[in-house]
Amino acid sequence: MTVTHLVTHSGGFHADEVLSTVILTRLHPQARIMRTRDADWITPAEGRIIYDVGRDFDAARMIFDHHQKSPPLRDDGQPYSSFGLIWRQFGRDYLAALQVPEADLGAIHAAIDADLVLPIDLVDNGALSPTGPLADLSLPMLLESLKPVFDDRSPDADDRAFDGAVAIARAFVEAAVARKAAKHRAEAVVMAAIAAAGDGRVLELPMGMPFRSAITAAGADHLLFVIHPRDTDWALTGIRRDADGFALRADLPAIWAGLTDSAFEAASGVPGARFCHNARFIAVAADRDAALRLADLAVAASDV
View (cartoon, rainbow, N blue to C red):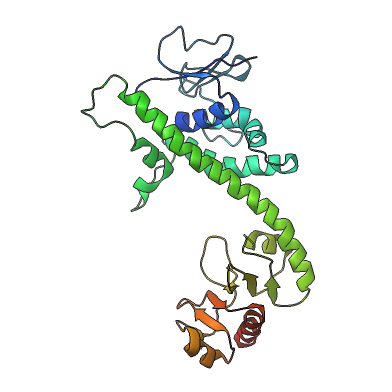
C-alpha cells in the first residue's frame, strides 16, 4: 500500500502523536500530514495511517488509537499510547531506515521501547507522572511546552507548533537510536579488550566508548579502571558499581584529588600526570605510559 496521508487529530498535541509522526514521516516522507477530527478523514481508507484519533485499534486497517472504551494493552497489562502502537508496528522498519544493522534490530527495538516508548505511553495514559524539580524537563513536558500560548489566535498556530515539535522530537529519537546502535558497536570492542586484559585490573580501550554494560555482561568483576586515548592525551577512569549510581569499584587515590600539572606529578611521582578530578573518578595523563603508571598506582592503592 502506498501511504498518501498520515492522519492524526487537530488542536493541541501531546508527545505520543508527535513522536509517532517522527516514525511515520521517516518511512513515508511523501505522505501529507492531516491534523483533523473530521469523521471522513479519521475513518480507515486506502493510503491512510490514522493514529491517536478514531477510537479504534486495528493494525490491518492502519488505525492506531488508544482512546476507546477497551484500549489496547501490553502483554504485562500496561497501557499503550499511539506511540507505543506505532512503534510496535513500524519500529523495526524505522530502525532499518536509519541503517541499524539487521542483527541488532531486535535488541535496539526492545531497548528503545523500554527506555523511550514505554515512559511516553505511561505518561500519556496518566499511569506515570513526572515529578520533582526536573519534571518540566521531561521529554513529554518539553514537547508540550511548544504549544502556542493561549492568546495566539492565528488559525495555523497549532499546526505550526506541531511541525516545530516534530522537528525537535526527531532529533531526540534519532539521537536515542544512534546511542543504542553505538553501544552495540562498542560492546564488541570492549569484549575483545577484556579478553586481552586477562586477569589484569586495568582495561585499555582504543578510544572513549560505553564500556560498563559489556564489563557486566562479561562478568569482569576484577576490573577496576579503564584507560583510553583522547584527542591529545589519555584518560584514566573508574568503573561504576551499578548502572544507576555513581559509586565506583575503586576511587583514585585521595592524595591526587584536585591536583594538576606539577603538583599532580609530584604527588604521584609520574611525569606527564596532568589532572585528577576532585571526585576521584577521572584523571588525565599526557600519554599512554603515564596513564598506565597512574593506573597501576591506583590499583595498588585500592582496597579492593
